[in-house]
Length: 162
Image (cartoon, rainbow, N blue to C red; front, side, top):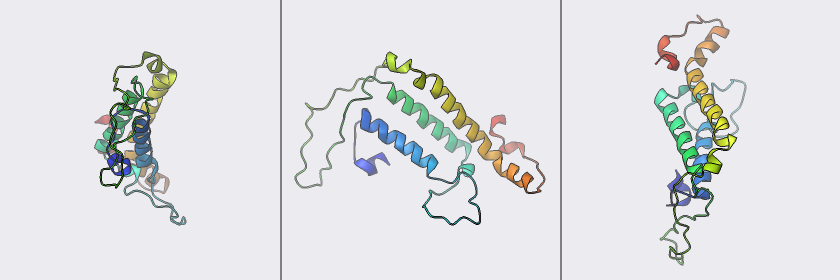
């Protein structure tokens, strides 16, 4: 998706990090979490599949992407302005000037990593994603129970037991 949005870019810097964050947020927030109420008219396009339809593998990908984003944000080169390579097919596009390109520095910025946002808050967000991953598999059974169904939840649907 990143390549389709802005072309080939370097895997570090502010633009790369913002693009990764926007990608993750749009993949989650661009879907309905549960069934859309029957009396609501869909006014905005949504991505296919609801969050309750995510398989454990998909939630694993979401968690891995969240972990990768944190890793990129605590790098020393996280705030560098690194523009993507110009698209060669555009007439008059400038050639890439490697002298202007900031050098990649993948070492960890300990000052940033020790901030609460990257330790305590990150762990809280990670736990919330795991909570929603577990809840997404049993939510339809809660809804069924509320509407007068059996209220039984098959143990196969409880991700925490896997």
